Image (cartoon, rainbow over all chains, first blue to last red; front, side):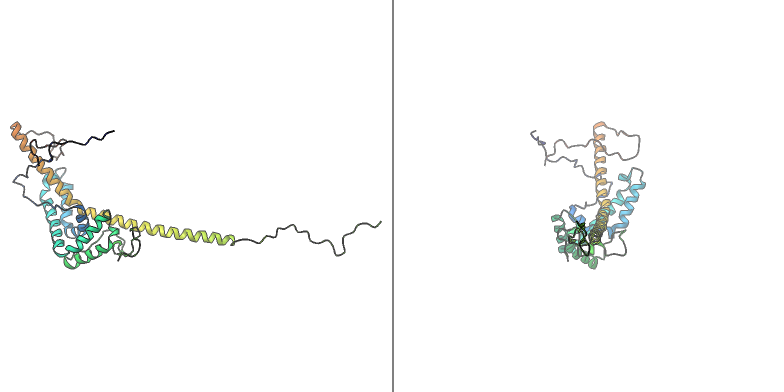
Length: 159
Length: 119
């Protein structure tokens, strides 16, 4: 079967109408997935309250969350943007190194423990945001601090 | 004629047992070895299972932290399109019709494409 490629006579296939004026504007986060994945725990540490607030609002909005939770949604976006901005100002190099590693390793965390360790310590020292995974067992080293990663491509010590 | 009698001192022992040296280890040693290997295998397996569980937890929380952010962006986009549709409807029909008998947000089935916008 010959494959028939879609043929469009125009490139832009989205509705470009801007947001009406009565809704306050917010700049979208505009960050690609690896940067978000790398910064996710910092975002979670700083923006937990906003995130929970937004999800609770959506849950209780009875199907109208898209309209009624715009305010909470803007707070979520602004908070995440502030985290990204702070990381960019204080830990640019570590951030970039970790993101590059994630991009080269299918965005798996366990292949990137060395850059992640540096990024985490930088974020903790400069921004005071600590990486935490709720529900992890208390009596063992957290998985992101173990030098040996069993499932990494290189199973020896990563740092 | 004298009868045949056994040799003096009796007959020699008849060798009916096989006299082959036992090869290898004793059976219980093989059993022990097998169990030792299997125990090590299970030990490593459960170590791996525990690590996988922690990795899965980490991945899931990484996404949970990002989900509100992505959802908020998507919701804003939907709301923007909703109001754009409303405005277009008003312009074309001169009135706003209520399509659904409900106040909920209904994600539109058909999207609007600009007719003459090229980029």
